[in-house]
Length: 239
Length: 45
Image (cartoon, rainbow over all chains, first blue to last red; front, side):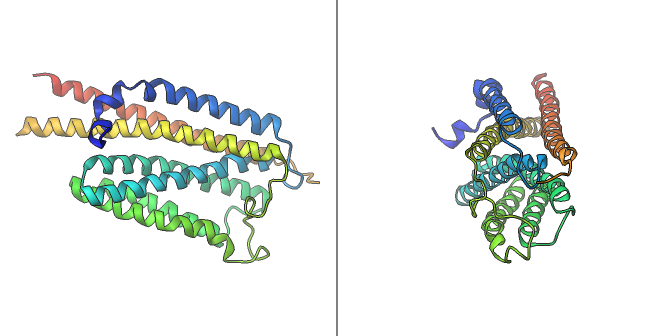
């Protein structure tokens, strides 16, 4: 199926996937993950109850990285073909990515307040993630204040590539300082999840939030297609 | 063993997560309805 056939208003508004299957699958997966995280996983020894923030905090970060991947593919697709469908796919991913990026920052701050007794600390992982959030924010803000479809799409493509360049920096930023010099833990890389139930809780959360993100992406893309169609019809009338 | 009650922070963290998701979804749905209304208006002669 070609991109033009797949990204169409008729397909998105009539699709059973977006209206029933994805919301149902997403909700089920989220309830399953929440039940696992709150009812089955045991309290962590050092941090107590608040450690359960870990599952949705880390899963939201994974979703953000996946959406940045979608943004990168869309940006390269748009820059090489100049098809508006790539631009909308990327912008919908950026919008949902901004949501999950914000969730990571806020949930991390609340967790940090409890575990480290501070809301924020200027250390590599936190600062590089804040930069990623600022790239998302710039993309959405500048797109709103820029006029012209081509200009908006070019701007989105450039900022999407910038976001993609920033993701490896976020991932490897934890290695920049020794563990004694920073508070943010390296849980997965240093085998910090010792119990199988911890691993399963994280896996269930990652799957659930990815399904939720796909549904939100679908809803956002439908909105963008509707908006484009309204603009097109209004322009036709004025002509 | 941790003796502090860290449950309030857990509550706030998950409340913020779901509040953001719900607000985002409500705004999207509201925009979609508005756009669908405009689209039906453009159908009229």
